[in-house]
Length: 151
Image 1 (tube, rainbow, N blue to C red):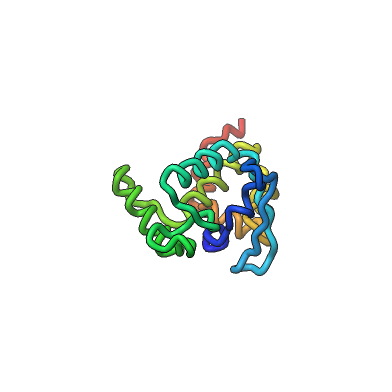
Image 2: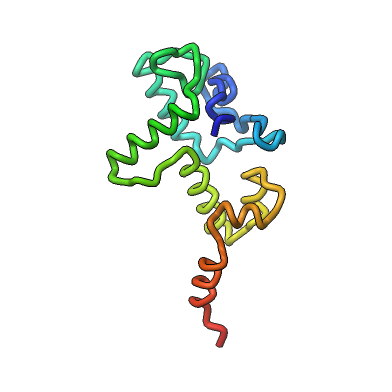
């Protein structure tokens, strides 16, 4: 998440305010470059940009600090925001990686279980790492197998 926190508005938006097709980040954890395809979240990004403008949060950062707009929010600040949102919604499991894990799981199920695609999106180097990240352990595997009719 810290890689995304460091995105600048110019990484996402063209000078005319339209959304770029891709954003590029350097994964600090793995050292690998990563491309973020933006078309699926284009509407949300435009709404978010308008929200920033409406709240007069003029900053070069995509996720500026409210108190110090010359800086982006930290992962700790993002955790506090997610925790507060969780409290407001009555959910106690929101964390800094909740959206990433949920998004990965949705891509996995909606892509007909294309583990290679999810591996690529997460910048993982092995299927086992990605399956573990998605929460597939022996128990969940057995539960899924119990649902299959082997005839």
